[in-house]
Length: 208
Image (cartoon, rainbow, N blue to C red; front, side, top):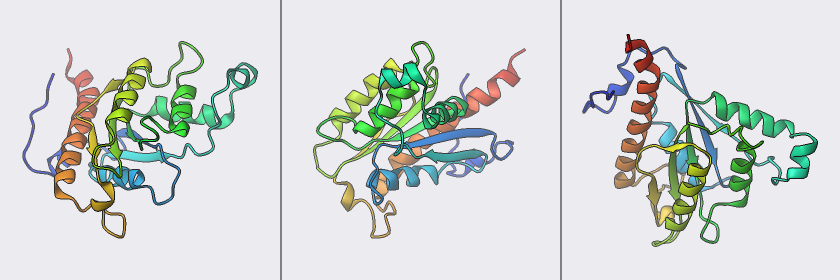
């Protein structure tokens, strides 16, 4: 069941939804404090309507995936990460490209979230993706790899991933997104995520 699209950029705030009715979890695959992927995630997060609770989970302290550790005792931070993913209604991932693929820290976090076997926290989750790279041709490899990983997690990609090339030129000195073309793409992606949330939240109440 689809929802009618509206032209006004604030129209998604017009639905009669209580604050915090939906939860979106942000994950940044870069640990750098001034990461442009973090800035891109922040730009996207600012576009969610006021009834969406958005938070970022810091994956810096998630250890490398190790089945010996899993078989012994799953670390508390991994348990917390899995809970946050499972409790979220949607996931927004900002992924840098490292040597043509996803960063090690992001891959470890996603691997842990899929464990133990048959208990993927991502199962059925809507996942949206944004990617910022410094070059004019990069980003496609990490997008392809991340798309495969999301499929293996039994999650579902939502909207058109936003790939920002020449990213340093698209943000101002304060790290705020300044490129209008990119902003349009981000708005479209967030609209798709929000409409997915609305379908998840509203359809059950509309069914007989």
